Image (cartoon, rainbow, N blue to C red; front, side, top):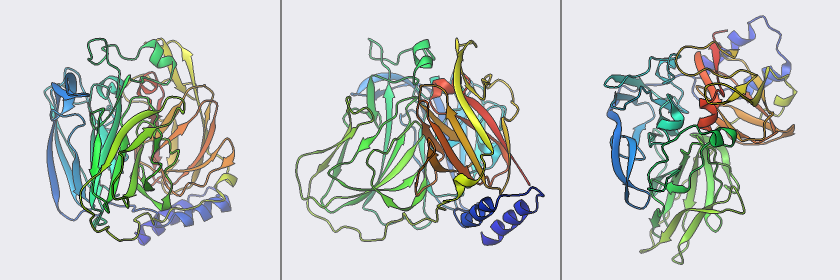
Length: 465
């Protein structure tokens, strides 16, 4: 790891371009933040995944017509250990072409699942094999990158968990997949997608919120248990802010990456695509069910799930929090001139009537390859800025790289963690910093899927220095 970083750092320093001293110091501080290379152990975990239309008992147990991975929503939960290789034989039995994107996973560019940029779309009846060794342990997920605003809304998503080589000895490891559904008067998925209303606002917000496909999710725990709770927001557009008040709760990981130290989860905004891991210890013996409520809009709280304590007291696992990663502070990051400012806005026109743009350009669909909107050099430190010229929300997601949030509206932010998705509020300016480590053509887009479908996507090329 150290040798690989030194080689990368030496290459960056020898590029001939004069670097600000703050950037050079930031690059040194980055050393050891996360692995530069995968370390395959030789073990291959093979899964078969089929995408097809089906009918499953969801929401309140009613039969819901969906598109699903392996006949279930959420899709299959894939678990491997760090160092193991994931092999997925994917078969498309949908009436549309599709792909699988492995959200948040640092992997070879050819496995990223972006049509015409990293692979050809998988046509109906075809099979494609995804194979890679993740570089990081953490909570990730997978979903289509073709007509995502429709295919994800119909139920195509699943969770990929890459466990630590030696997982912390929690009592249990639990996953909550949060989603919302727009149902029509027949209690089926509303069949019109990318409506003018959704495009002009913050995407498609449903009228039913579920956790693991149900509105009545209950986590039953025994007093003394210590649980790792992994949350994923798989919604098209809805942002949630889970309230864990009254619980002994700490955030230990964001977007799959461990924090420098655990933090309080209050008011954490879980935008579409975001994940957060919570360390929960239950010292209470019994009591009323504990309610976990979404308070993103304070005047419209939404029950997400309940936690019920029952049974006999068990011993609480005692171990140090796994949130002790090396996360650079980059206190001088804002002194480095921004390399590029992305301007986010909308205009009338295009095939959907509204185009969402990055730097005045709307991504013209996934039917062909596109030129990169930005080129970065591997192993260099960059500060990028997002200026939201619209009044709408935009969770910006980067493929193939993690970044650190530096500031909102020029005010420094001290987040002790990396991200792959950041929520940019209306009329807000956001500064981030990153060191791209993986060569390839990587997508950047708004993870409000209707905004992305209407053009708020671009490519970032990472080249060897």
